[in-house]
Length: 333
Image 1 (cartoon, rainbow, N blue to C red):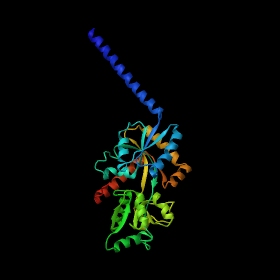
Image 2 (cartoon, rainbow, N blue to C red):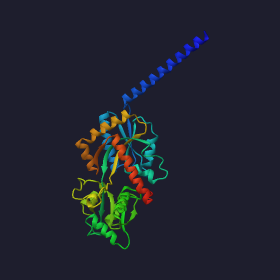
Image 3 (tube, helix red, strand yellow):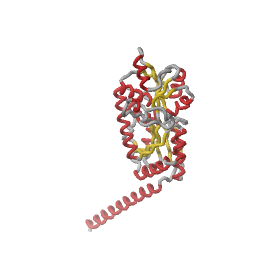
Image 4 (cartoon, rainbow, N blue to C red):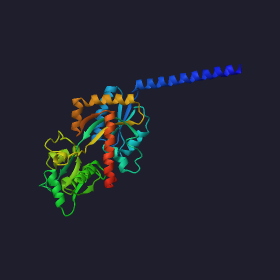
């Protein structure tokens, strides 16, 4: 009799566990289907006003309209985006916290010993959003004869002391891109790091430093005003904003590819269905001419890649630039 009762109790317990499991699965499915049921936080790892912030606000507004749910942009600058990345990494993987990854944040674990995250392992790629072209510029007064990359390299090689160039900082993408060019071209130039693109451009215009590898969005007004001369772009193809300026690859460096870019990341473990939904919306947003024009006005070029493509892009850039950073013993300030 006791054995019979124990067996019946055990069966009832198993049935209850099964029901609880089914209920849990049902609730999880219900939550997933209901997404988004509350506001979405879009973390930007840089201050307001820059291209990453502007792109985030353009896409965030469109995303809110399509999802019929508020998308709040929150700026969390510092340590090349590491502060923001840590916040997103630790967030609940439920689709309600996203980050606009930019190249400095992608590479920060290579440059900061205590960045605290692994860009490849700790996040779920969602969709790329934009490319941010970079450009080699010279001061036309300081280097009047330097009108292309070949002449710049010839000038650098002819100098008794290394020719100076600047970027927005040690470990910045402009710094890394010029170091890659130097490595491929077998010439030398001395890096003079500045704390930010604005003071670097100001001193390049002023003649304190004759060469800069700059973000196109920051340099373009000065190029148009004739204060800076653009001699090469780092992207594989020419850019619409400077159609007459050849690429570095076109000027003898086959395979050279240096493009800063941005895209949405979510915490690792975010449900695939939610990631795919966001990616689908972003694809449609970036296909709109209005969005493309707004991004172009901010100096960025709309570029969509789905989660798998973005993941591959992220891994390739992480490995490529990480190797250069190690080879050149580059560290951020």
